[in-house]
Length: 272
Ligand code: KIV
Image (cartoon, rainbow, N blue to C red; front, side):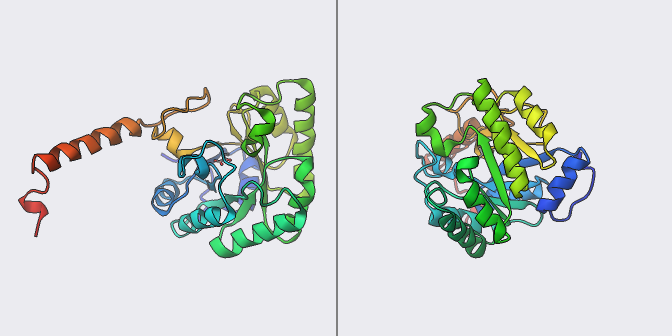
């Protein structure tokens, strides 16, 4: 069942701002490969994020820091080949935009040109303002990302809720306003108090997409492998698991092993 208010044949950055204005919530999920993206897009998810969480989910790294620009472009181009409707946003990975605005623009151009993506995402507020501005000036749509920014995990030290204290909350609100002012089309708010996230969403015209930010924002994003229950060590309070694929898949693999060992697979109908 779809609860969409308007039938968007193709979701654009403009559609998202329109959805917010019309009170329609935005759905966003991650994908890093063709097959998953095809299913996510076919189900009507509005935005697909080729997140640098691929570093954890696909490559098994502890953090998002090791993934490279080339690897992000590989994931993004696989996703792009699968989609008919969703807007595709690609994370610029750690180390590919922080040092100077020209580097940010070069990285964003490579992502757009080599993968065919529709927009990029960068983490941070005023520290990366010039990088974001330079990218926007080249006509590349940028999504911001505030609150818990996993590329700065070694600065924070933990993955706990951000902006609980007044000073950090104030900076977050200023950064969100600044991102809107310079031209970002949306902002992800990760792991911040629901009251603060709602306040930020209500003060901006661009959509705020939350992850662990309550339901007072304009849309939600989850890591697909987490919401499908394929990962099972990661259990934050905000995560709703829609399936338990870890168990389902384990049982299927076990059954396959049994069938192969018992010479039950393949049977007569499964051979030539
Ligand atoms: O990389 C990612 O998957 C993300 C989401 C958690 C927002 O940035």
